[in-house]
Picture (cartoon, rainbow, N blue to C red):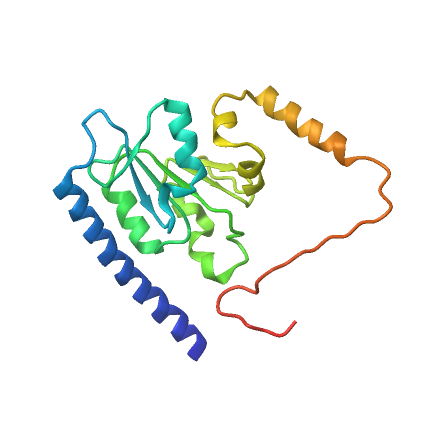
Length: 197
């Protein structure tokens, strides 16, 4: 029971901490009014690195042919993930009526840390993408390894046939006379778990 209280206390503190940071960033962006009116503005929530190494940011850059500005000043798109505060994200998506992408590479159904997100925010984002199988209308299954296999500049111009051809090539290379096989399956045990293996 004490562990559960600690879990919810940590969640509450995370909400207030991230809300404070979000409001500070929001006010700064409105004060600076970064970017021109015709520039695409992307708001990030739940991504610690932001666009520095974010595949979706580079994909949108390649697809549109222009470099979006990361700013909460009149955003044209919101990119969010399960690494931020759930309740803050619900508030943000209910306030901003712009297209939004929710992407997570985590298994939301089994990990306690992410169980709030297992409904993929109840249809709030325009597009939800992730690891799990989900029957929601706005959800598309998009596995993390696809981001490593297809760089944004390739994915922006590739057709479904091009992607299927590339996957077939990889599968053909993997077939052969293999005499040894090894597999490693790892799970980090969920939230705050340091169990001995």
